[in-house]
Image (tube, rainbow, N blue to C red; front, side, top):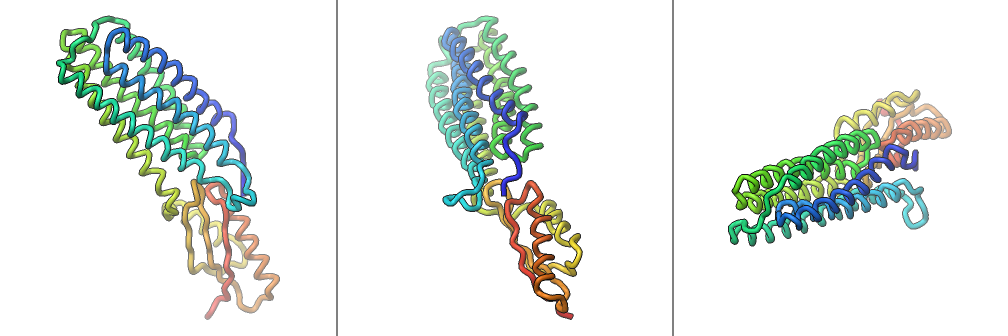
Length: 291
C-alpha cells in the first residue's frame, strides 16, 4: 500500500547531486588534464560515476513510489536497493581503474605533474561543495527513509574524504614531491572500492529479506497490542521487501466472541500496522486464546 510520493526535499537532494556532480566533473577533468594530475583526473572519474549513480537514484526513488500493479502486486519497493547495488558495482569498477592508472604513474616516478595554485583552489571548492551535498542528502534520506538516497549521501561523504586526500597530493606536487600525486590516487582508488563494497552490503539485506531491527519490530507489535480485543500475540514473522517490511502477526482474541467480531479486530490491527511508513503489508492471523 503506497502512502506518499516523492516530495520536494527528495527531488531537490537528488537533482542537487546530479547537477552538482556534472559541474564538479567538468571542473576536475579540465584542471586535472591541464596540470597532468592523476589524482584529480581519478577524482573526476569518481564524479562521473556519481553522475550515473545520482541518475539511477532518481529513477529508483521515483519507481519505488509507484503503486502496486498486476505485475508487481507487492509494490515497487525493491527499486531502491537494486539501484544501490548498481551504484556499488559502478563504484568498484572505477576504483579498480583508478588504481591501475595510479600504479602506472607511480612506476614512472610521478613525472609530469604541473605545479599551480588553480588545482589547489579547485579541490578546496570541491571539498566544501561535497560537504554541503552530503549534509543535505543525509538529512533528507533519514527523514524519508530512502536507502537509495542514503547510498548517495554516503557517496558524497566519501567524496569529502577523497577530496581531502587529493588536496594533500596536489599540495605535495607543488612542494616538489610529484610522486605523492599517484600515491594519493592509489589510496583514493582503494577508498572508492571500499565504499562500493559498503554500499552493496547495506543494500543486499533489503533484497535478501532480512529481518527488520528489533526497535522497529517492537514498534510494530506495540501497534497490534494497543488494539482493543487483542489479548496476546504469539507467532510473528517479518522481513524486508525492498525498503519496507512485510509482517505476519498471530493475535489471540477471546474464544467466546463470534467470527465477525474476531475478523473486525484483525482488520483494525492490520490497518494500524500498515499505517506505519516502514510497513508495506501486514497479514493478521487470528487465534483463540487458550486458557
